[in-house]
Structures are given as structure tokens and as C-alpha cells.
Length: 80
Image 1 (cartoon, rainbow, N blue to C red):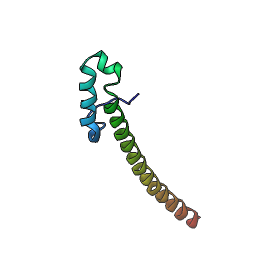
Image 2 (cartoon, one colour; image 1 turned 120 degrees about the vertical axis):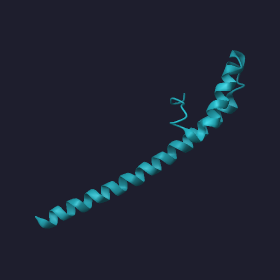
Image 3 (cartoon, one colour; image 1 turned 90 degrees about the vertical axis):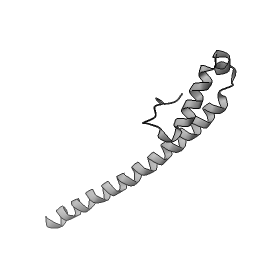
Image 4 (tube, rainbow, N blue to C red; image 1 turned 90 degrees about the horizontal axis):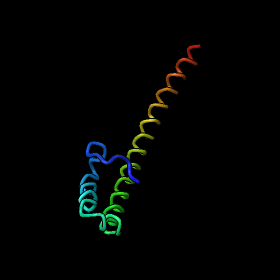
């Protein structure tokens, strides 16, 4: 199961989203018969890579934010 698939949330994977949606529109037999599995797997890998990149970026930002907070607390402790 995928998260909500919208262009503004997943711009790097949008072409794969469209391919999967087109495959699903081809009919129920294609959808449930496994014809769309390649599209779904490619989309899953793309979304995973996007999520991991976002996670790394958020961790980098959190480290910078925590370092700034620690520096502020150090200044407060030194002044006390």
C-alpha cells in the first residue's frame, strides 16, 4: 500500500505514478492478474528512495538544530 500519490508530494516519482494508474485503468484483469506488478515495484522503490532522502535531510536539520540549542544552553550555563 502506498501513501497518497499526488504530484506535489512525490515529484520525482510522478511518471511512475502515472504509469501505475494507466495500468490500473487498463482493466481489472490487468490490475488483479499481475500485469501492473512491475509498475508497482518500480514505484515502491522510487518512493522508498525518496523517503530515505527526506529522512537523511531531516536528520541533518535536526542535528544542526540540536547543536544550536546545545550552544545556547552552554552560553546560559556559562553565564550562571
